[in-house]
Image 1: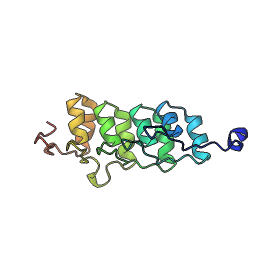
Image 2 (image 1 turned 120 degrees about the vertical axis):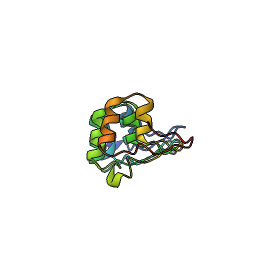
Image 3 (image 1 turned 135 degrees about the horizontal axis):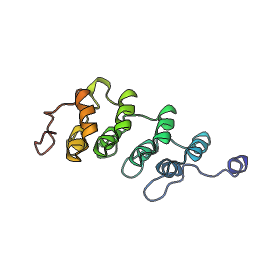
Image 4 (image 1 turned 30 degrees about the vertical axis):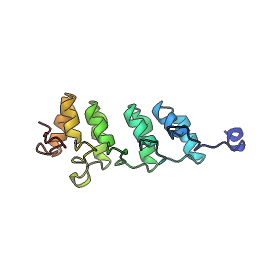
Length: 159
């Protein structure tokens, strides 16, 4: 590690998509590399062209150990992409029941604001869970009080 740090590399170098090495390490679940990059000045809040942060990359790729670590290091549980997509949207849409629970426990639903958060299409996490027929997240979101009457931009409710 000393030889890497001594070489003075850019841990925040970006490609065309604006992904940093931390985005890649998070997406591929390389926890040791995520730790090294953060301790060497990697930007945990760096955004890609689409507004995805490293913690969102870990969520999308279902790398819960990296997700947990990044949240422990101060990454926001409520971060949004440019289109308004949150980690709770992703977890609900893809049937990631454990992730739904963890995100809720970490404050993704503070004041129900995040249960009802809408993306650029006006869809809530419950809309996505129902569309994808992911019934465990649907049940979990309903138990937590997600609205069944929230309308998307087309006037559709989740149910």
